[in-house]
Length: 298
Image (cartoon, rainbow, N blue to C red; front, side):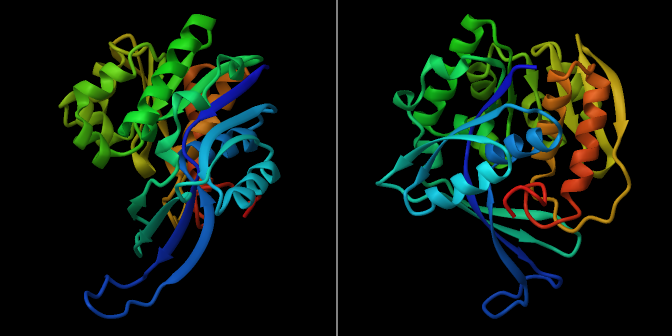
């Protein structure tokens, strides 16, 4: 097995779990933790947790928290390729997690979306069997150009590419057609049900998955606690149930699925088996706070 390179966001997560509804203009009791996160970084950590022995992460962080994030990634077994930004702070997300474990994000992208083409080198692909791009990169001009450059260089080198659309809110702002044009050439797409709906206009996740698989050779749509759908060549080829668990925090569940799915594929698993691995990781992710495996620098 050769390496996995993830290009994406490294984020400081402030996770606030509140059992009662938010009370406007006054206090709401909450349990608050500050943790390392970011979709790209989470995927990398879950890929290591799922057995991938060589995982590298390219991302941009502020000098304010660079040492902390680098240490957390190394502790998780990830090889960090972090660009330090002296002008912008590390991206920060406030995750408001309600009693049902559903999360709402307040996002300050900070240094993450300042990842520039000058930060990228085709040499990063040496020894890499797969490139994964966090969709957050496609929501700002500089990081979008970087992600597109990485995708094209990977294609030229014969390295398959996957993309996670990352955010239904940001995706709606960018526009489905623009996003699909930017990620053209990717072999694998990892949307959740809301993102798949936005990208296709189909209300049902199965129909959306099938439609997307006419554009991308392999599509895995996550459907929350129900599991995931795999689609290839215009048809759903597998429906995988998620293990039944009592969720605490849904932050990072999709990242866990993606990391485990990619690790399984790199180990030789077919798409169904990879989705089963992804669903197990997603179920593990939601029973603890934050988006990383519990042993990953937490």
